[in-house]
Length: 256
Length: 256
DNA sequence: AGGCGCTTGTGAAGACGTGCACAAATCGCG
DNA sequence: CGCGATTTGTGCACGTCTTCACAAGCGCCT
Image (tube, rainbow over all chains, first blue to last red; front, side, top):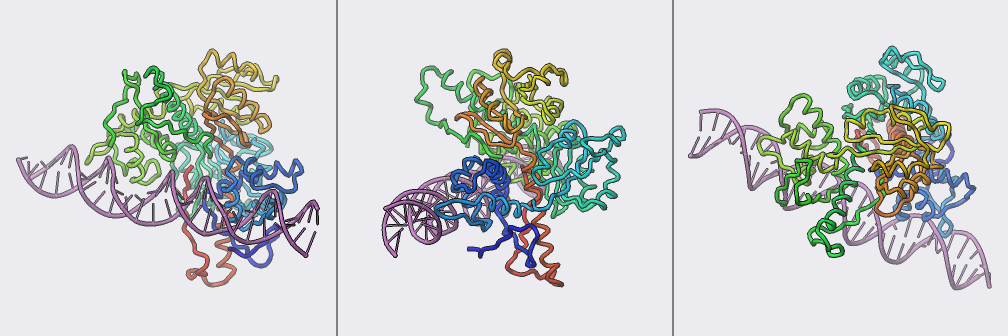
């Protein structure tokens, strides 16, 4: 469908390489493919088939092929995908050719852990600044960075071009921090606080709530328990379940 | 459609209250509703309309009504939903009437933060045990719990009924830990390690990968950048965009 | 050079999720 | 007692996502 385009090189050529607008579901899976591809590259695989990569990423191979075809990438029929090339392509599409600066607000329990998390550096990000509203914490050094007061955000943002803001404050403070981030030009926010943020149009918010993840698991746990409890309570009827209650196998290993 | 059922009371009555099998999307939103409802309850709201609750939870009101109707709950037309009753209903469906025991494996950077996170206790969970494979860390006390060696998992699991396992180890160790958890009967796992886990049927795995969240944001950031760069490079054409590249407003504030 | 096996890319069908719009139901007030 | 304001519950249509199945393309071997 789309004519070939070769974004490979990080230094963009003269023509602005138009990004195809990918389905959200595809975008959410690309990072997973990328991680799997890096693993493959380290174990010196030159190429990989859709089946192989799909296994490594934990998805269906047809889905993977469709995802990759979306971004105009081309594998070679009969052979597979060139691992190194595919890494370049996905990193380009995800905008990881530049190391993006992340500002982390809130260095409490979770914020501390995030500040020290080494998984960011290897995956295209750099924690550029730490902030907190608590004067007690300002000045503390974490992982080579000094915690600054959140009011200094405008000044720091002027020096460093902050691409993404991470909110790891208590829920009560989150909206205020979000407003501050937006006001200094941040248009992407990752929110760990358990609350809904309202932001102007054009600002993307993603939310991670640890308790919610557990609660979803709890539901399935509860469901499994009542499902197995039902035949046991009913007595002998194990294979012949009451017709009304189909034992839908459900999809285990639910994706993100 | 469904005849009324009143699960309200935690002590189940004689008849096993059958759980309707809800759509996954609905299940993922219920915890969000629950959190919003608790907020409302604290500010002494007796009832709430679908519109009001939808706002508080950041979703469409029609979607909320459909979700709630799925679990057989009933509001009152012309009035709204009884906050306290709805909390009971959702907590029952999610299986939060019992405080579930969580085992946390891996007390590194992130594990430490999770062990100290007080958001769990208030939301239906109790961290029952901490494990690590590193002998250096075994014996350390975090938040009143002592870190044990991961090999003691079977013994501890025999004493406490572990409902959910949380993996916060490096990727290399995650699969092994998952196997161990499964072998002691854990059927729900929350995985923070950046890797795919393979588990037997019937075991639910949810994954949280912080770098992936950032990469998804990075994509949108990249996309916004090229989108605005395009007309700017073209010159004056700001309102009249090239027809081929529709500025699909996209959904900001993307859900989990 | 030709054929064979393997793998990609994609059309089509179905499942799933979303949002509108409206009928049915309930409350409060005159 | 009846009426109007309000809000729930849901039928329906639409868009998105998933999965199957297969044709088209590529490399290798003879």
